[in-house]
Length: 116
Image 1 (cartoon, helix red, strand yellow):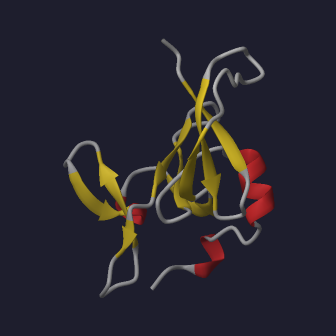
Image 2 (image 1 turned 180 degrees about the horizontal axis):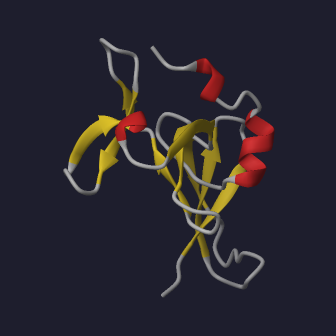
């Protein structure tokens, strides 16, 4: 099963630190040095072991998040639950055209922009 000591308990705090998204609402945090870190979305949970699974770039398949080098913890992140089309001529704070709004599990909306 998941080592609960490594799961961050506060969704709000984690969302402020990480603006990542995943279909499960969870991400694995990896730290390689004081200046190099990354997160990977947790794609699903193993039905037998209960372990978090991420895609391994090296193996091109799902592996236990804990098995990859640098694993530190599992964090909560945003989970998209829907999209809503934007009104015509809507722009974000950087004047980029907003084509839709992504809605997360808390009901918050985030712009989906067109960079072309």
